[in-house]
Length: 236
Ligand code: 1GP
Image 1: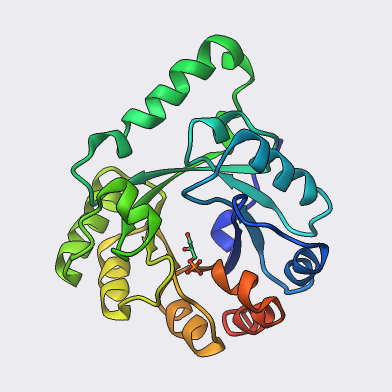
Image 2: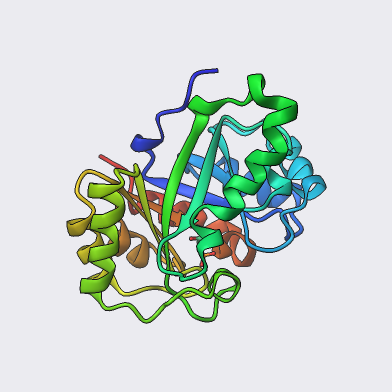
């Protein structure tokens, strides 16, 4: 399968398998103009929830990627791309590599020859909203200064040469000064911003710095407004 050109995506809609969805909600996503759908979340990424979500997205007009954030999600269903997250700003080493290796140790013996390696893209996360489930789960050090965040971004982008640095404020709109520092520090890495985008202004502000923005919660609160956030970052 050919990998979709994720570097060109300006706007991603993130759908959470742990939250109920209706046909109307999916319709709002499909007609919003968003460049791609990512299935991802912190809690409830069970195999059956992820498979149900991916099945419902089979008729999506845009690429559907799966963010593999739990062991179970690693074997659920088919997507056109697989994002493999790791968390930079935690002292809990399992979020850098332990969980990923554990997943591979289970999968390799059974599916080794069939693993679509070329469809996997690692993402280096900076988890920055202390109230978020991701921050609690990973015990992330969310109190980073812009300079510290830039240093993490330089490490990920310039030394480890990871393709993506993801500035994650899930649930709240983040610090745009910190985002700018990350973009500056990350070298050639693609910078994704997600967290609290609910208006065209916020989308434009984050999108003027980040290469790609992600909208999650808004789709569950006010699906009709998703298209405003798309229009705010579309290339003209
Ligand atoms: C979550 O970055 C996304 O991973 C989006 O955050 O749900 O706050 O829009 P929101």
